[in-house]
Image 1 (cartoon, rainbow, N blue to C red):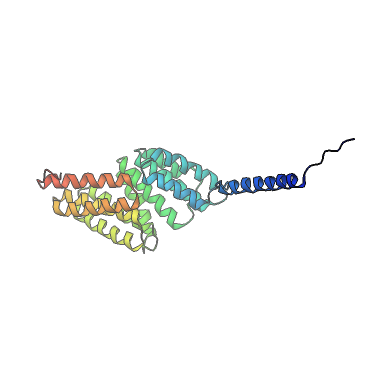
Image 2 (cartoon, helix red, strand yellow):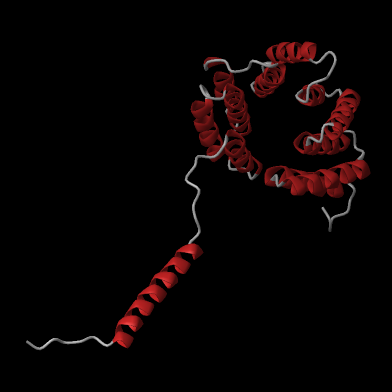
Length: 256
């Protein structure tokens, strides 16, 4: 019987080729990005949802905030509360204030600390204001103000801001201006850029109402730059509109 011999050199070459092929395949695997399949933490999920809100994607914000509330209701009620408040805020911005009140009141309560209680009361006051239910808005604001004596909570900045809104709605311009300035100082002290941008924008609009158009331009430009830094496109657009209107009232047609 004839036996076919495989040259040693050929066998070694085959082995080396196999090893090289394995090494090359392994190197390619290292280049493939590994996707983290773990669900995001409450902080990450909330941050992503808040970014949607800043960019003006209000329906998506509402949907994701509702999901976040349901997901963390049992495991992390504190973060569930934040999602619930964000959903209510998105609804108010969409002009659905009655729905926002339902979200704040009808679900199992997760507002266990003063921060979330204050913010809930302030959002309710905002919703009632948009529904022209001013006595209800005043009552909710008074409840929030009691919890802010003294104003040791970050959420108290929103209470001051809401007081400015109510004063502005009653044409109490000097009082509105005072409260918006107070809320601006409070926001800066607490590094709250959202409230800072809102205060600047409302100072600009109050200056327009007072026919202090030069001041309105300055405040509104500051609000615009603050909104850009924050990434809040809707606020930036509103601030730019106030700039244009103030220039128009100054008779600067090109800039207006």
